[in-house]
Length: 275
Length: 284
Image (cartoon, rainbow over all chains, first blue to last red; front, top):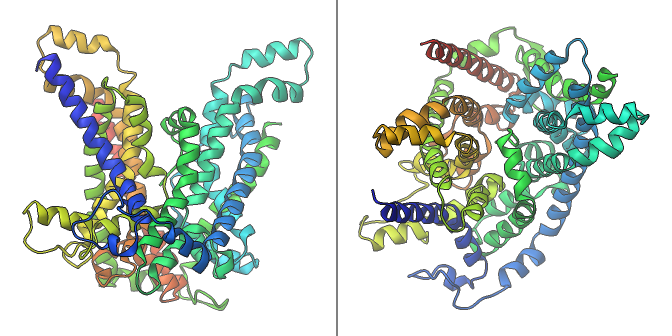
């Protein structure tokens, strides 16, 4: 193939890829801003003839979307804090100290990483019921943290490994204490990695359906994925409103995603996020 | 000191992941209602019941079909997309980020999005197919004949970016000299792909296939949410869905736990075989 034909083929393939991944989102956005009879019109219109905010208004007025949104935000942020608070020192310990059983710990973490929620949800639910944490956000945060920890540890470990130990040794020879070294040298260097890990943890918690479905039954405690699934299941589907809800749920995820895209790709390549 | 730093993380993992796994194995030996505390020892009774349950085997089969089809398509599409993203074209970095979108959105959004596109009466896909003259009557995508196809389509769309990311990262580290040498030897583009690219991708594909197999075979939320609001539920009742229903629709926590244990055993055996085959390949 000549150089020019090859370039054209690459561009066409890239265009096909772009359409395949983004078109469903565009269609969702388009539906979210259409009035009801245009949603069901034949032939369908890609660009709404009349742009309306009625679907969004209905979502806020007639459903508990805002409550779900706040719940999701609370639970996801708490999960990030707990996972990082527990995971960062552990990953540092795994990479900076030699001790018996270190390899066994790393293997256990990798093993836990492969577990799918469906495999532990039944005993987990029984446990949470027993200690009275079912139907609480605390129970959900604990579930997410345990679920996120293996991949978070794995990611953080690879970030810490990429920081040369020599820098720390040099600082300590100069008389800095270990806590100081960690605070002023290691954390700033590992910062991007910690942030990326935090984002992945946030996305996992924000997106989860099964733990929230099983652990929460009170409507006012529900998170977005469960709340939206229930909105969809309620009698006749209000497509305009459901698409508006879907749009609002992915905005925060795509927002942070674009913002820190560089870290994200690095993190994903090192094995972050499961699903 | 090292242990001290690890302690909180290990405690959390032990208490909330490893303990539940062990407790689940213990629970599978009891007849227990999902909500009430009483439990009666039945030994391997739950396992006997399940292994004689035709629906269990049917769900294993559906799950295998689902996992097999989605994995093959994800790999093919993912590798193809990664090859495209490894070329030079305007907007490449942006597209590399955009391609990951379907993977980072909540499953519930992916599912309702596609349910709308595939809606039999008002869906865009049926409209486009009819408009192009490809079909005479609208297809009932959520009906019994098509729901597995729809489920596979949604899942491939949602999960192929995982393959793209892994493969693309590897592609970028293949030395250019290898391709130049192949070109000098007169290898065609297809030959270069087969003899240079694929062998280099082997190791990363091994890991990707392993992880995707485990996660597709245990995938619960995508099939479960696809089922909602439709009558063709039994046609995509995969093993994870059936396990969930045993526990939270039939309230048989003991039997549900036993199914989770069986799921784990099947995966462990399949992974062991996979590793062995891989090792043999490596030694050839």
